[in-house]
Image 1 (cartoon, protein in one colour):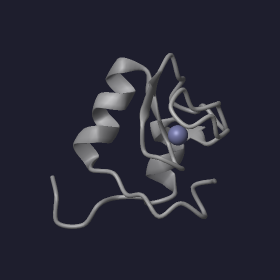
Image 2: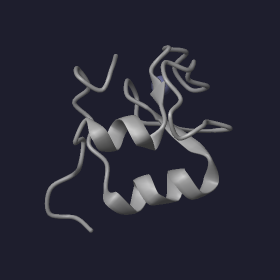
Image 3: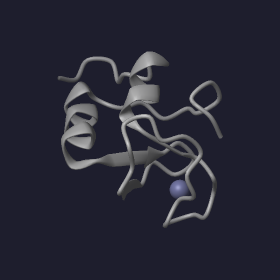
Image 4: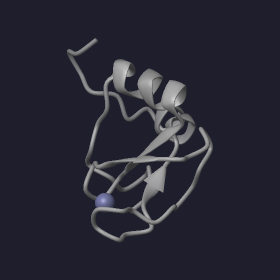
Length: 70
Ligand SMILES: [Zn+2]
């Protein structure tokens, strides 16, 4: 799962929080993971085990924003 193939979307607030807290998001199951750099790529997810955790930098540049939410 990559930013190009995920169906999950994130709010700007979630991405800002992830940046502040050094978190990334799993693009397979949407679980947050801590200890991620903003530009983390393909880290292993603690929840589902998929190498699909990306930092907020990648989520932002891929345009994975939820519509209609702040
Ligand atoms: Zn996962």
